[in-house]
Amino acid sequence: MSESIALGQPTVGEEELAAVAEVFRSGWLAGNGPTCRKFEEEFAAAIGAEHALAVSNCTAALHLALLALGVGPGDEVIVADYTFPATGHSVLYTGATPVFADVRLDTATIDPESVRALIGPRTVGIIAVDGFGLPADYDQLGALAAEHGLFLVEDAACSAGATYQGKPAGRLAPIACFSFHGRKGITAGEGGAIVTSDPAIDAKVRKLHAFGIDSAHSRAGQRDLPVPQFTELGYNYKLSDIAAAIMRVQLRRLSGLVDRRGKIASSYQRMLGDLAGITLPVEPEDRQHSWQTYALTLDPGLNRGEIAAGLRDRGIGCNIGTYASHLQPVYGTTNPCPTSRDLFERHLAIPMHANLTDGEVEQVAAGVRAVITAAS
Image (cartoon, rainbow, N blue to C red; front, side, top):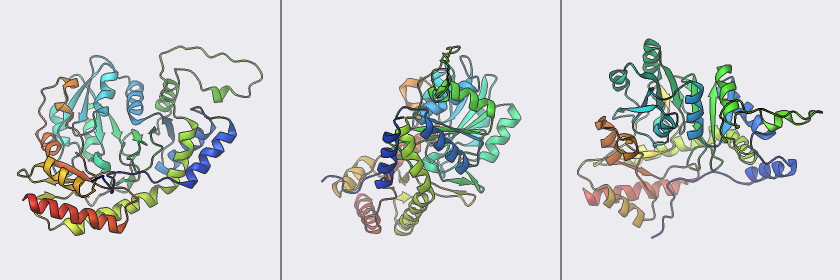
């Protein structure tokens, strides 16, 4: 049976199409143009930060952030282990070494005590990941960073619309990096952003994301013919104005989309809370989850592959949660992260997106209950 209830699905429609048509009429489709500027201003205002830079994806955002912080060969950056490997990749791109920290079993976010144990003479910073859209423990992480003179970066790839102690994701560390991939809460299919209130960081990443020169848009309309000079190595990490137009519409929908996902999560909690064989995700009282992913933790005796096959036979999309990065051969690390490994082996993501109807949520919950009960 084909999967009739998708694991993830973007919420887009006529408003986004109209916004794209407006960009077409403007004649400026390339990146780093006037529509990007408008989106950056609106996104920064939504987060409550001074600056936002739109980029091609969150991996680019992380790479640029690390470059702006001066990370390079010989440095070590402590990274949350349980995350899509793009986070660790961004460290490798600079020539530095990612050192993977274990995560908490309940929240799947980086464990501050694991971070503390890994700080060494080559450590220059920490990248915390808001796991599945749930912010990490930023009070403790910020204190650790300050105590040891380290930078702290928030990988907010999944957490647009989430909060920690009343503060929005994106303002939980001096630099935050977002993703607008198709499975995120707000999306242009691909895309990302760097948010900061540090003008020096903003100036650096802004220059590096466009080959190391000022944007063509900034030179438009000048009477003479300014010719920029390439004084340092930059990258082509720009977001197109087409994607920025989509993101302007998506940003206006953010609160409603997060609210709908939260209601779906509450329904799952109610419908599956008494089911033996699984543990449901948590949302600590001091933070609000954006629910980019809803991941069940299966009991050790259950075969995840068989559970997944049973759900897909019922037309219900599912997948792993994310990766235990330290197990990936590209990193060549032997640093153990037992909790991350355990979650990597037992997490099963079930459908979560704002388009799910109440009937589909009930169908998913009933399918999970039937398949888990049969396998137990």
